[in-house]
Length: 373
Length: 123
Image (tube, rainbow over all chains, first blue to last red; front, top):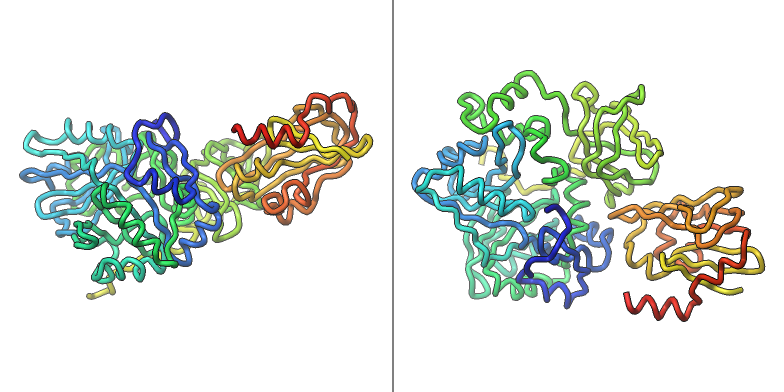
């Protein structure tokens, strides 16, 4: 199942969203808020203040057992053995042909790994982990946990007032905190390109935490619509659209997820193909595009070269609220992926001029640890 | 002047054999923030039910169908510069196009304003 479909279950904040005017839609098997006041206003609010997102549809897994780091390396291209405690790593669950089964965030917690996977793919992922990992490794689906994200330049001020100490975290770091009578696992991370946090909270306590956050006038609830436009501006791929089983990490430009030792040693699914693509370059590459005019181009639109031959497809596209223009992502033949290349896009019989543009479209503002610190 | 609506949420305001067409307040609310609109040029002939205009919100593209047949006399050029007019004043300044009716009898199949507003409450 993809973005839409039947609602199978409700999430801990279901009523909370409805009470605050959230427009609920079916997403990844759950009813989720697509917007409250309007996507544009929510998007810009997040870029300027703090936006609260409910992402409890995502799968939260705890993978534990002896040598879980080495075991994970048989399924993913990250260097989990060298991963430091309470640090996050972006990684990719890979198929034997090098295609991407899912993208995820893995945090080392001692000998265990806390893994957050996409909502629409979580059950398939659990299956891949359970079948692909040795018997001593246990995969615990933490269904009782809700997941909130607080994103934007004021997120740190809002959250540190409720959970003192979170301001000390730097990008891609995690810690357990105690606040509002419960344990919160908080990481400095997100999916908007802004500074911000992701908070794993027991489901029954999620509403109290969400209330405490939006009691601050700097924070507002934000729907999935703005989450999508924010991540598109940030150049971040969306699984099932910009990356899937037909794309490899190298095609997708996610080379940073293939760590140095793994490049030398291989040993992950699809390693032969992926290492070959790293060496010789992929046939197709994921690119960013800015579109002339005002009309957005959407997923599925055809990308043409100067001769009018099809060279790829748009995988995500829409209006950029921050740039006030249409932007898109797609795949093209590697020879035409150079920044500044002029291309055409065909959508519903109409041609659009487009230019290959470096991503992110809007600069990232992550709170990184100062160099040398 | 008389105002009619379609089940696709277009409105048509008729004055003699001329009419103005747009989308209803209900439609603009459902679409959300509108970022683009494409309206037909004067001279184009449209038949009832044809895709006459395009409106795009942040999320998706939608067609606007001709509620009645006729020849377009004017597209609303203001929407090109400021498509958000459709959100702010959907049944006024956010109109899409004007046309000369080919068959005023087609209006008989449309809802009047009271019937349309009542019907929207059931959606």
